[in-house]
Image: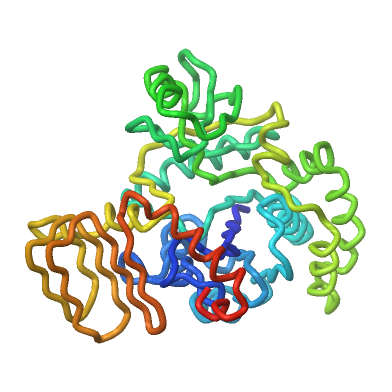
Length: 357
């Protein structure tokens, strides 16, 4: 049976001040009628209902997940006591699913991506599921690049005609410089790395055993407690003892049985306020205005988001993000919105300012 695992443990530091450590980005409504987590779960409902959904998140957010996804059984919310990157997240989810369903197919999705063509996405997802069902392979979903992006990693696949939509992966490439990204785009066999995966639980567990034997041994130690009252404590023990490593670095880059299913379905990883600006409806002057009360004079190509009822006026502003919350205001050039993460690092380093992070 096909199950979905949503990774929802991130702190969303590039979306301060709306996203904070106590209430990160994936639990906010940025697009549409739901939060990013709710939109991710709803997007896959045509093929995976919430009773076959698992969410892995920081333990402090478990109640928020339960509130936002009330149809999902609470015992399928996995609380991480510490953040250890994506490989431990995938490992514990795979082990739990395999315990319940030895034939489980896992669809692994980040909680905070935005997709405009949901029917197109489901079609690509079904192709990836079909590939994972046929063989013991690790399938990743690649995004057909539309421009030479330097902010994403790339996936290189075999060239030439293929019998199916799934193509053998030759290499994973780090974020390139512009000249290299232009070469990737021109070659036609490089895809943006979306961080979305499909595989049998048993297949990824074999890969963990091969490439991350220490992590696999810890899974074996805690596995007897699965399905008992001791399961939460077993999960905590696993996280406290395991290494921190990404699934890309720990498994995907070292494995030979990796396939990519490319697609173009309006994907965006929503990695900064500039991405939010690009995805938000705008007025005739290019202003994206998301607030109750505002007025604009001689201003263009700005992003304004406010969660309160203050009147906010923009005068002579261009290419600027103004983000207002109850206790903080961010004003930044949209071209430098990636630097917001540095603000959060500074706030976190100061005892007198931590409450704002």
